[in-house]
Image (cartoon, rainbow, N blue to C red; front, side, top):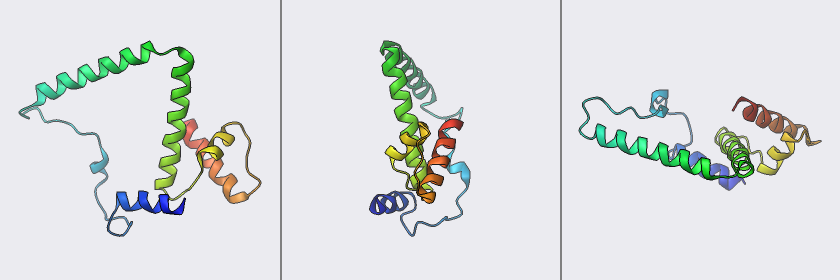
Length: 121
């Protein structure tokens, strides 16, 4: 697990894993300027993608859609925590969602944090 954590950190900041003082706006969604040559083409593709995604979602049985949403929330929590340096295993996140917390104080605190992240989502 430590190797996985290090790999994530190095992927984010390959030089040393430290904050390089970059503007947080680098993380904001891309906005294509009104004067961009391919704005219309990109807008059309985005609309098509959104339509196909909505169609795919409608085609799923409710149980599958709910299960996928729960899985994605747990995985987002896992990777967000890993990026922050908190290695909360997905099984521990699932246990926390069932109020089944570890007796180990450090692991329990990570589970509580993970559960809070998912509640916010």
